[in-house]
Image (cartoon, rainbow, N blue to C red; front, side, top):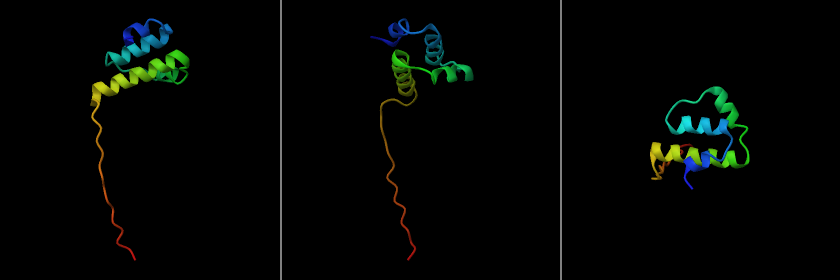
Length: 74
């Protein structure tokens, strides 16, 4: 099931916020506060939308930095 189809099954207020985010538009502080109250199906969709936004920003490649800090004290 695609995100577009899922958005049609959740609360309209949440769907509007998710649509704005997926379109690359900035969401308001009020919208952000409403997302903190997400539960059940809306919470699962929030996670899916966040994952889609992450993918579009950075992709699925994972990297890490191995850094060694040597302590020169006695």
